[in-house]
Amino acid sequence: MSATQGTDQESLQDAYGVFKAEVTHHAPHYAPKSVTTDGWEATHRAWLALFPGIRWILCFLHEVLKVKDRCRSNSTLSRQLQDKLWQVYQGATKREFAQRLRRLIEWAAGASLPVSIAKSIKRLKAKSKDFQVAYEFEGAYRTSNQVDRPMNYLDRVLYAMQYFHGNVESVEQSVRSIALLWNFHPYCRKTQVAKRGCISPFEEFNGFRYHDDWFRNFLIASSLNGRRPLDQKH
Image (cartoon, rainbow, N blue to C red; front, side, top):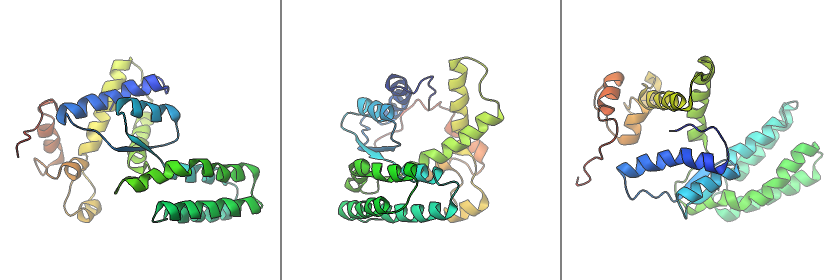
């Protein structure tokens, strides 16, 4: 994880480059086939520059939220449109997805929708191919929800600490420490039961834990500072 002062391609590429450097230190041949993000063009270009050939999947959830935001004064319409959008999302194949999206756009064109909402629905036609890329990769995420939730947590923590008061280097250390705590924080009892005894995101990702106590698990896992690659011969 890294911090950046800008949202242009160069700034984002530098920040995502930290991820690339660290992951390839552990797995030299790491080469992701796809990435799911929102529609920010600089993000798309930054990933493509770092991992040539990677396929970009446009997050469907962000489009649903855009429509939802435009319906705040009409809860009935908001629910109706969300239901229709998620019905499109549930298309089992590219063809089915495209057909459902076309029907939604046709319906919206004949309905008496507010102008801003009608335009949002109409713009989905040009984005259809970007959504459909997900069908080419089995198990690919079609929304960025897995990233959005930790980012929401990060935003709340930063708000509580009144954001930053130092330099870029201290910002970098702050966000990385927050990310570490997130990776090792203990799940609540209900989640542990649902995940069959898994106690933290670290264990869920790696398939093991060093210690039953989350903090000791954190200390043991971080004792090498994450710089020594694991033995690849097993």
